[in-house]
Length: 142
Image (cartoon, helix red, strand yellow):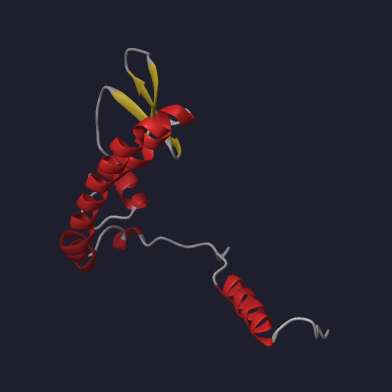
């Protein structure tokens, strides 16, 4: 097809955009996890220590400041809880992730923690169900 009314730069941009979208589309292939090599490596721990955690502290402090500044507007808009979750809670909780771990690895290690008084079932983000031995069911948003 020929589109004479479109400029050459627009055509180039359209082709480049299409190629970018196709090449960055998520793969649907299954990923097999090697359980012996599961978890953080030395390299990921060092990078997390030197770069990740310090940037996480900066992000958490900046998010807290942004929350304080935006709280009146969020209250008027009716989403104060959502802004608190995204700007304050999630950045500070991210700092509690095990050193060098991905979210999946951290969830796995936390699910392996033994507490005789509760059963933890991770349903799906952002919630997990905790069943206590006194038959109370508590849903904890994360």
